[in-house]
Amino acid sequence: MVFKTKSKTEFFARQEILNLLLKRVEASKCRYRQNIALLGNQSLGKTSLIFELLRISKNPDIIPIYLDVKPKSIEALAQNFIGVLLYQYLSLEEDILEDNLDFLIKNSRTKIPKTIQQINQIRKLLKEKKHADEIYSLLLDLPQTIHEETQKTILLIFDEFHNIDSLGLRNPFLELSNKIMVQKHTMYIVVSSAVHSAQLILSEKLSLLFGNFEIVNLEPFNETIAKTFIDNKLQNIQIRSAFKNFIIQFTGGYPFYLDAITEQLKTVCLDNDCKNISEKILLSSLFETMYKDHGILNQFFNNKYYRLLNNGHMNIFPEILLAIATGCRKPSQITTRLNRKTRDINKYLNKLMQMDIISKKGVFNYINDPLFENWLKHVLQKKQHSFNINVHLAAQKFEEDILQSLTTFIDESKKDVPQRLKEIFTMFENDIIELDKKRFMLTRFDEIDIKDNNTISMVRARRANKHWRCYIEKDFIDELKINEVLSDTKRKDCIKKILIALKGIDVNARLKALEARMWIWDQNILNQLLTLFEKPRFMK
Ligand SMILES: Nc1ncnc2c1ncn2[C@@H]1O[C@H](COP(=O)(O)OP(=O)(O)OP(=O)(O)O)[C@@H](O)[C@H]1O
Ligand SMILES: [Mg+2]
Image 1: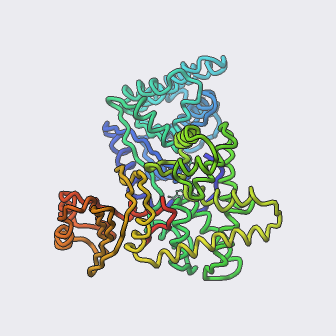
Image 2 (image 1 turned 90 degrees about the vertical axis):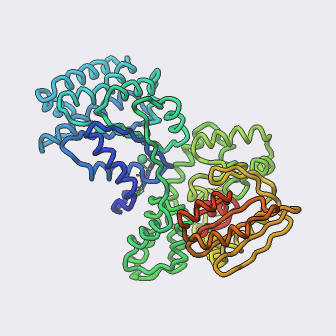
Image 3 (image 1 turned 90 degrees about the horizontal axis):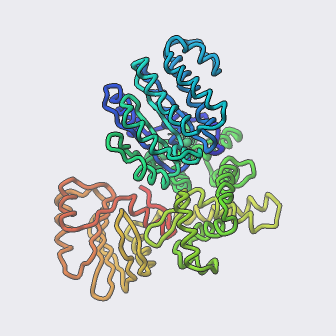
């Protein structure tokens, strides 16, 4: 976890995931335990979600133990574990509490003697400053002991649980999995922003027979929720739909970024007694948060960037990231730009992937966090290459840059989807791509045209005597519509059939399309393709 705003914003949305977690917590009381792994990129709101869960799931029969695991020593984890466990237990029993370990132990001694005895044993070992593995094992026994003494269910949450691997223990996940198997009254939620490492731990070290983890992936806010979030934050302030869409695309729908930017917009409007967000206010707010030294997002990304550099590859990582951020997405392009060996570049790309900074779709690399990419491109690069310390000039240059992106975004949004697809198809160069978990080649086409027929359009792309046919339907697709499309695809020269359902598709129509080996894209898949080709996302 790194520096973030002390936001006053209330927790927003995430209802589906909250309901699922609540259901699992409720079930754990009735001896049906399902452990959960909550995974998602940095700043998506995992910790906030857990705190919201703890707030709404308060129950006298459940002792919640939330632990933020830092890559420090076992001592720090032990102190925290014991303190939180006793505090939470006592807070279910009585009102007056002191946040002090001696107080907590004194007040629990007669109520849970066995647990306290075990805690004292751990504290004795801690004083001797050795026996890390023994301490860890005893700590993991505490939930079971306190359950036996109180009959309460334990909800044990390890935030950033992959850090357990950095505590200098012999085999921490094997030990954890052994405990999980026998502790039927403890529900575990493990949380991680190191998605890549966490998935490896879960599949290789924690894939247990009786304690399997249900993986819940946290995604950014979708378009509709992000819009509602902005509207809620900017009550009584007018903002053009195009600006709203631009902010969502620029931030990738991450709640933290949306919050920081809308907070700034609101402040400017209130300070100037203005009820309408102009282009000038939008640009200056982005400058204030993203570029200025004290800007909340600038500080956040600076931290992220310097932690990355501390990883040992001081020179090469920034160069690779800047190359990707400015459109060199294929290893061959990065190799040429940096004048390095392909083998070396591939090695560093893999390392960045393991660190969850970048991901790969076929040969295309992209930076996971869209606003970090924008910061690298519009802030870091500019600051690195500027000897000018005139802040007004910097503001002007930054705002010109963003205005250019905003104008492109608005211009692209005016084009219809078939036109935008045709433009993308002309950019194909026989590269391998991965989309919707399928790998395929983006054929370099000889000819591309568009045919319109009522609400349906077809982009036909020809290579020699073979075709791709891509159908884009503006309305909901029912069985009648799908029959119409399918009759058009029964041609031997058609080697790829894609159906883009922008307003959704009926269940039977979907089955029919799949039977006919059509590939159905939703808005999300379409946007993944647009993003890889540096094009703004399609928004409704
Ligand atoms: N659902 C939400 N509603 C409102 N604001 C949110 C929501 N989720 C996240 N935020 C905002 O984003 C900030 C970051 O969230 P949080 O710290 O929970 O993310 P995280 O995924 O735990 O990050 P990290 O990976 O760094 O631990 C919060 O301080 C809050 O301002
Ligand atoms: Mg967190």
